[in-house]
Amino acid sequence: MVKPHSAVAVRASGLTCAVGGRDVVTDIDFCVPSGARLAIVGPNGAGKTTLLRTLAGIARPARGSVAFDGVDVASMRTRRRALSVAYVGQEDQPSGDLTVTEAVGLGRTPHRGPWSVADRSDRSIIDDALTAVGMLAYADRACTDLSGGERHRVTIARALAQCVPALVLDEPTNHLDAAWRLRLMDLIDSLPCTVVAAVHDLDLVLRHFDLVAVVCDGTLRSFGAPVEVLSPELVHDVFAVRGDVVGHPVTDLPHLLLTEATPFAASLPKESP
Ligand SMILES: Nc1ncnc2c1ncn2[C@@H]1O[C@H](COP(=O)(O)OP(=O)(O)OP(=O)(O)O)[C@@H](O)[C@H]1O
Image (cartoon, rainbow, N blue to C red; front, side, top):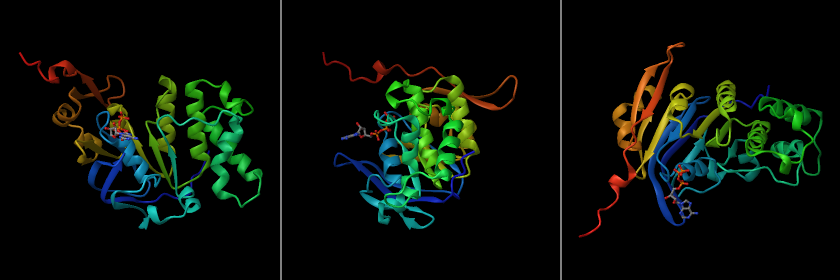
């Protein structure tokens, strides 16, 4: 099993994130305790990716700051940042020219000195990461010869091999089939690091995350425990759907059922006479 280094607390303070010269989310304040899992939810275009990229230090904040255990991410040198946080984007793909092992091995780069090659410990971590995502049997295959879901699992494995105290994942279940969606969530549950992930499936948020941040209309609409935040009223206001928490008939665990989306056409401007 891959053992990321110890977890960090992630704090956003007065954070405003911009893309294309436009502020997308403003004045975000929250703290994710060390080792906790935060889901970021919101409608399409709400600014989740923009916020995640800023949290991971890939984009600079327009205003405010992000700190890992009190250290400003924007002040970190590239290597220090790569030892602190791994980011997997929504559509990130391993480079086509590499084998699966080589692509996952990129996660070990920040841990090595210049000109050094992967040692036995690196190879063991790479194998563990591939095992965790069910891709060890594909280790010698070219990444070009993989399906979309398999490539995505390799990208997740690269982040696991980075062995960092914070993982930032944009839609981690993208491209995955039903079993791998659940396996990946169980894997994320088992990691000792802090996890921040944008997630569209609110039912997964309810069952797998300690905290949820709802981003809507450019602000942090709500933050807290999923079972408290994802009320029918909020789900209706933010997502324009009906959301009911119901007990699973076999396990009795709470699940969020989404039904009755407000027709989109109803919110289009009427044609003038
Ligand atoms: N490169 C860009 N230049 C200008 N505007 C952009 C750019 N990328 C995204 N945007 C806009 O910024 C806003 C936030 O985009 P972002 O990708 O952060 O949303 P999101 O919540 O992750 O959406 P989704 O759920 O669809 O993935 C959107 O209105 C989007 O159209």
